[in-house]
Image (tube, rainbow, N blue to C red):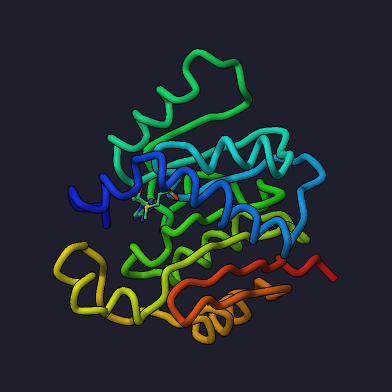
Length: 200
Ligand SMILES: C[S@@+](CC[C@H](N)C(=O)[O-])C[C@H]1O[C@@H](n2cnc3c(N)ncnc32)[C@H](O)[C@@H]1O
């Protein structure tokens, strides 16, 4: 589900960039540490700030990134247009990722899975495109925020079958993504790091 006008504005401003850089990325780094290079995917990349941080702060060698909203992808492409960096953007859907199986060393989700009606299918796709031993980093917005009456008035989210941390962790396990670490903030936001089990 793409963002309404209010959330589009909330996601495209310097405050959002600062929160992503100084809070979300820092928390994910504390949990998982940087990567040892590698080919990385970002789902729901928005305007590409996360994509940049995956290169600069997590040390990925290259990042593929997509978003359901063509306007977001255009902003992300513009962010990188004058720089020769190993990034590639496209318009796409996290429930049908156009990538081969076992393609990526890591996948990042900066607050997108709560926007997907069939979020379990998105987790299955993350599992499919990760290499065995690959890592999934996620930052998510939880059910109490989505169902809050004020948030419901202001923003558009799917309302059925939303998750709290426990539900998300369980679903990671069911999907074959072994939770390594997680942190819940007031039952409202959460960070997760999980690993695709290496082949036996
Ligand atoms: C809350 S915004 C977060 C954007 C960006 N990751 C950030 O942290 O600034 C959620 C993003 O997910 C995208 N999105 C929603 N459903 C999606 C889907 N099924 N596949 C890919 N992207 C999706 C929206 O277009 C939006 O850009």
